Length: 333
Ligand code: ADP
Ligand code: TRP
Image (cartoon, rainbow, N blue to C red; front, side, top):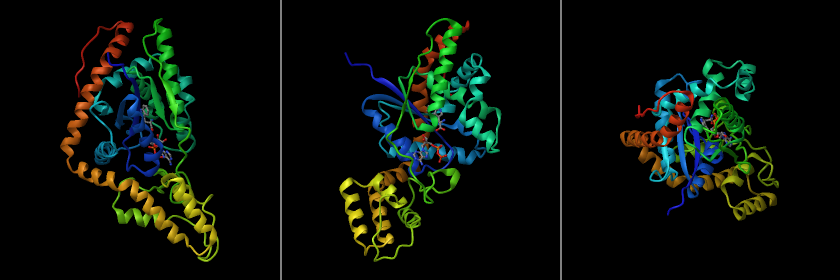
């Protein structure tokens, strides 16, 4: 008999252009799990509403993400890709979890505290964000949740909520998953040396026209050491990015040539562009091709939602019965 695959779940918010930091920090490691897990990937468009109020942007970034996952090699025959809002039972589940979640737990959320401290928009969804995220995670009996360091607390809160629910109803109804933190993935720096992030406007988009990519790479900050002087690749922003994309031999080679003097930063940036472009060239061509056919992307999302509902339905019915509600059947939105 075929061995039952363990299940992994990852969500990415639909809130603008995907950049190299998202690719290296979240998408690439998540795709590598396809070999050993059944993977549920979803586009967190309900979560995006806490900050995005632009319907056009929400729609286009959702489709951008679908084309991105596919172009990078997501195999949808075994794995699932769906849109969070196409599985409406997740908001029902969030309500059940809410009723067993103390305010004290939510008040500890770093994201909420950060929003308060920095005068960002704080609405009820900002505060309840971890409850919806817990519903995303707990509705599919998943084994692991691979996330970046910034999301670890949210996964731990989901475990706390599952524990409280099980304690209230006196039985192990909800399965507790493990967070898997990609410790080995470094924080990718942006064009100005700070963490690459949409909120700093210092990002290199993952898929953009080749000449635009080149222009951005050539704009990376370097010091003004003259061409003939020796230069240190390690410790420089250019070096940090080069290390991520080049193999060790290519890195050592550039490091050696820069250290000898006679090679300008401009040449080094052109070499960085080459290694990035090499990795992105093929998926980029696939991305632009896939992105043209919106109706196929939407069909694929519908299919993913249908399969997600099939997996989530028995879990939610376990929860409903524990609460005292009858089981019911669910249909996609
Ligand atoms: P942004 O900071 O641009 O808004 P998000 O917060 O939407 O990005 O991040 C989505 C995912 O990408 C998260 O899992 C996060 O850990 C990862 N990520 C974002 N920026 C980086 C970066 N500079 N380096 C590594 N991973 C990143
Ligand atoms: N909060 C995550 C982020 O900002 C996105 C997300 C929503 C998520 N639900 C999830 C991630 C469930 C993992 C599991 O990146």
